Image (cartoon, rainbow, N blue to C red; front, side, top):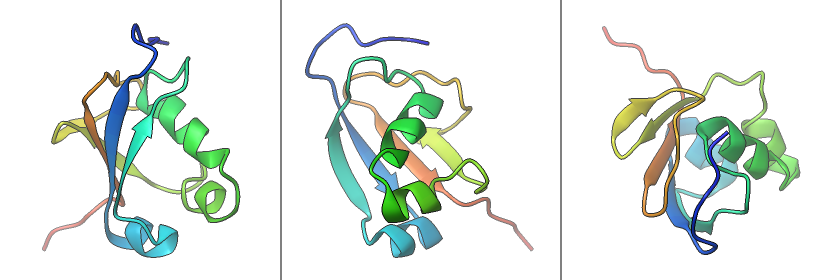
Amino acid sequence: MVTRETPDAMITILYFARLRERLGCHEERLDLPAGVGTITDLLEHLRTRGGLWAEALSEGERIMSAVNQEIAQPRTSIRDGDEVAFFPPVTGG
């Protein structure tokens, strides 16, 4: 796990498609708590909000992520100033 070096690291989180609809939120700025340094850490932190957040972002839900507009993996690091996006898997056709 990667930890933050500055106590006031802030990121922007974007929610797309059904996540945006379920959460009633399309964007937020978040001060990351100590110990949140990866996509997995961030999802775990957001789930602690409970209710719809725990439901929509549950481990059983298929959620894709991107950091600074590049597809991210669960262990991708998050740093101060990053833009993190969460969205459902998409299909083409």
